[in-house]
Image: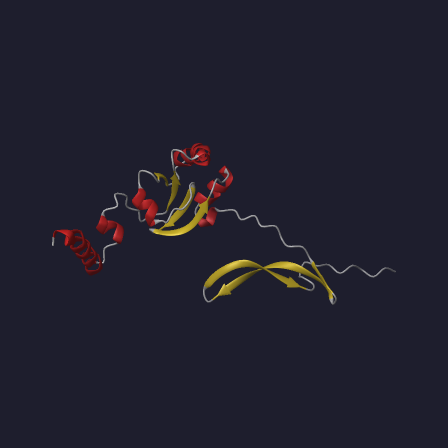
Length: 173
């Protein structure tokens, strides 16, 4: 009976979690709860050199008012386990308590700043693809919005034989 006490305790905790609808982290008291607002989590370690290289940028973003939280994976193992952190540095954007995006490895200051911005303020720099030559002619890439139901996914690149911006040269006299 003495050997079964931890098993019984864990079963009771899990039963309470499912009965009350509490999150697993809240029921097990991980020690670090997530905010319901948007924030950026920066998982690092004291022994990690790329993490140390990124720390000034992270602190500068925090000074600018960005909701960014530094988490040492050695000190807060439960939170690192919850987000399945395999490598450091890892930067995770959390929106409404749910992971929205993740970057793994050392990233530049501009990438981190862009990653931390709200979606409406981010810059997406994607070079347009080159024209495609086919036997029937040249096809030019044109950016078009992709709508699926009421959601906008895009823009996507579509090949058109003669896009709307194409000007036909005048015939020479």
